[in-house]
Every structure is written in C-alpha cells, then in structure tokens.
Length: 289
Image 1 (cartoon, rainbow, N blue to C red):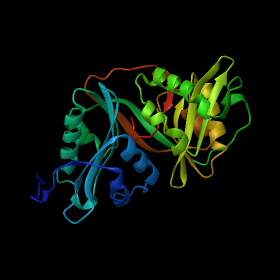
Image 2: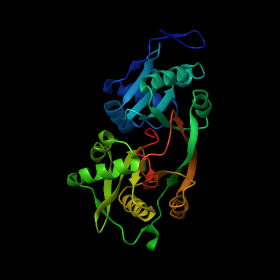
Image 3: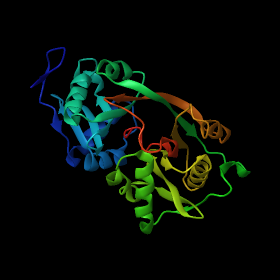
Image 4: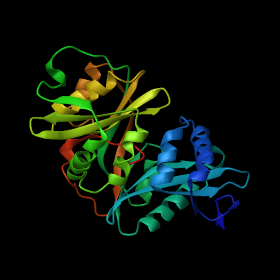
C-alpha cells in the first residue's frame, strides 16, 4: 500500500490501460485542464501510463512515460487530484516512473508549480519553452518561405516522414509518428526540389488547434508548414516554441499569436543534444518532450 503525508492509504501505483480513459479525463478536468480526450487515448494506447487509485473513486494521480530508445524517454501528464495535492503523491509517482525508466535520460516540460519537485528529484533545465496562442493572422509577403512548398501528407509519405523525424529527433519515435494521420486534424509535408524535407501536424485540444510537431530543414520551411496548416483549421492555434531561437517567436507575434504560458524543458540523467535540434521547431505535445 501507498501512504501519503496525512497517513491516508492508497493502493499501489499501477499501470494504466485504455479502460482508464474516463478517469484520466476526469483527472485533467479536476486540475482545470481541458479534458484532452484524444490525447489521453493516444497516450494510454501508445505509452506507459501509471496511476494510483483514489480511495473515494477515480484516480488520485497519474503520470506518463514515453520511451524512444533504451537510453531516452520523456515524462508527461503528471497530475494529482486537487483534493490529494501536497501530500507526496506526485513525488511517489515520479520516483516510480524514474525507476521504470532505468538508466534512460528522461525529459519533461516543467511548469513553475512542478519545477521544485523535479529539481528535488535531480532534473535540471536545458532550455525554455513558451506557448504562443491566438487567432493566426495571415500576412501577405515572403515571410512564410518562397522556395518551400507544402501539400497534404499521404500514406505514401510515411517512410520519408519517419526518416526526416528520426534524423531530426535523434531517436526513433516512429510508434507515435505513425499514429499522427489518425490522431491529427490535418497533416502536411514540405518539399524542395529533392523531396520531403519536413512535416507538421495540427491536432485538436478543445477549441484550440495545436500545431505540432513541426519538423523542417529551416525556419522558412517551418513557417510555410505552420501558415498552411493554420489556414486549414478553425479557431485559435497554439505553437510551443523555444523563445530563445530566432526563427519563429517574433514571426508568431507578427501573425497574432501571444505567449500565454512558459515552461522549462528539464532533463534527468546524462542529457546531451541528439539528432539535429535545429530542425525541431515544436514538439508533438508538451506531454511528449
């Protein structure tokens, strides 16, 4: 049994399954997040989710571990129900996850509220991130990139998309990328004269279309992908960007998006840049660092 700081007993932390979907959605709502039903379906089916059952029903907390290769993984959706907050459940879940991860380097997006816990557990900051959100304003001119062209992705493009993604990310996250055509609302590739050089997807999180991942050979290709996807999806869009990179933050502001929240990407273990980080412009989700 698991005991919190108030002496309340909980069942042991267990592996969650797709059948826990409604409880995960309820946990998101409990913490003031959007329900994120589609994201939870993806995570429960494709990653390792862990949770602890609440004595009064539902989940008291949950966390997700996504593995990319034996020495690299990420953490996401670390949530504790409001009524059980500040009792040590978050720390217990994170310690369980780190044990499951073994010797792998583990990364995550940390809010200000979560950063003290992650720092205590040995995570350190490696870069900043900011969520730019709003109605995307189409602006005439060459800023989106003149040579790069995009088109809707097809099934025949998947092999090239996987190659581009692995080279940029520096690890194989193909099991998630293969799910994007069904998960996303729209998906496009960017090409030059030699073939596919990048891709991007837009998926729905309530009224907001999250544009991610965005993988491109350069900023011009990333801007073209985002511009064309934003024109296809209704409502506001969200881009999770590194505010210290020059290619997109000012451009996003020029197109009507504003930074509404900031996080820090943190790493536990032997972190070092992999692949070609300059080609990674947005993550799939902040639940998948």
